[in-house]
Structure formats: structure tokens, C-alpha cells
Image (cartoon, rainbow, N blue to C red; front, side):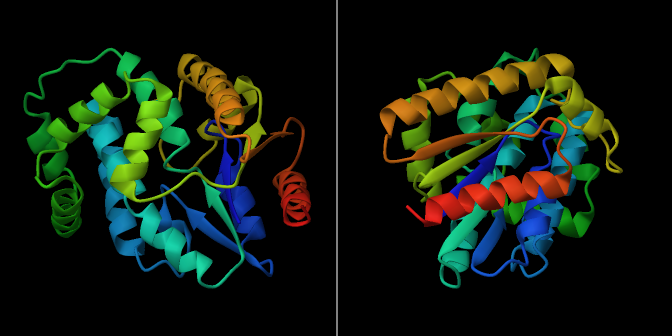
Length: 262
């Protein structure tokens, strides 16, 4: 059984997965940050991609941000297949067929300059040289070329298409299928934003009140569509307001228990 844990930034998805990771019978995959799993075979590349994403945030270029997001999601399929060899239950932080339905259309609305100027060169130059080589090789593997700007532009165009088309196209490209269940961690935007600002790492391009509010609304729309289009997929919302990470983890474990008992 594959279960996706989704929600706006600041809801504590990564922390909850850390709490659950050592429990028997539950495998964990971090769809965006494979290096958060200490035994991931993709940790080194994932770290390089995380750095590339941070550079895209610093430059403020959404095309580069979206390109890196895709490269991160390309790691998911192999990680999912490996995890399911050892466990009957897989819990993932985000999902490559759920979160892009939320984020691609929203990133497409971000005001941007469609010409890269010197920012592609700057993006490569601000990365560690060894890590940049890994990112370039993975970019070639996943897209057939080494131009991140073209990839990002292509993905933003994909985000203008209807949700079912985005879902089908990403399933084909990434070689993954829809999970059996989706758990949405729901938290008011003000609380989520406060949590993101307490992180030790820097903020991301999209971590603003307006964007998180639009993201929260978009999750509702996407999951409503998924519930109607795929009645075989269980969708459950978990209210995280006022709960500690341990409290949220207990709610998630309870939901997993219900799903396993069906």
C-alpha cells in the first residue's frame, strides 16, 4: 500500500516522517529530499539537487526552480520500487503525481522574465563544481539535454493544461502511478509560515503568505478532483492546528492503521 503525505510547507511532513521512520512495517520515501533518508542510495545526488534548488531560490528564477523540482521527482520511482521490496506499507513525503498538480499551475502565475540573461551561467557557477557535474548528468538523463531553462519552460507550459492531462503526462514521464491513499496535513497559513521562518535553512521562492494561501486552496481543489475521478483512492484530511509533531505523527499512524485494516 502506497500512501502520500501532502500539505503546504510548514505542516511538518518531513518531521512526521522522521518520527514514523523507525516503526515496523512502514517504509518512508522523501519525494523531494531523498537525502533525508539515511540509507538512500540517491543521497549524494539529492544533496546536489537541493543545493541547486537553493541557488534557484536565491536567483529568484522560477524556470530553474521548476526544472530542479522535476529532477528531484525523477528520483522517486526507483526509491519507491526499492522501498516496496522491503515493506508492505510505503509512506511518502509529497508525491510526484499529486504535488505537481498543485505547484505547476501556481508557479506558472509567478511574475517572471522569460529570458534567462546570465542566470543560467550564474546558476551553474554558484553550485559546487562536483555537485554541478552530477546535476548536469542527471539533467541529461532525465531530459535528454543540459538546458535547465528549456526544461523549466516546458514544465510551466505543462502546468497550464487541465489537471488530468498533467497527471497522465507525469505518470508517463516518471514511470509512477497514483498512490492508494493521500493524507493531507491541514494547517492555517499563518502557523505554517511561522514554522518555515523558524527553519535553520533559508526560505524558498514560494514561501509567502499569498503563495501558501493559494497552495492550500489548490490542494483542496486537486484532492476534490482526485476523490471524484478516482474513488478507489482514499483521501483523508488531518487537522494539524495546535498539535505537536508527535501528535501529528500519532494521527498519521492512526490513519495508516485504518487503511491497513480495510
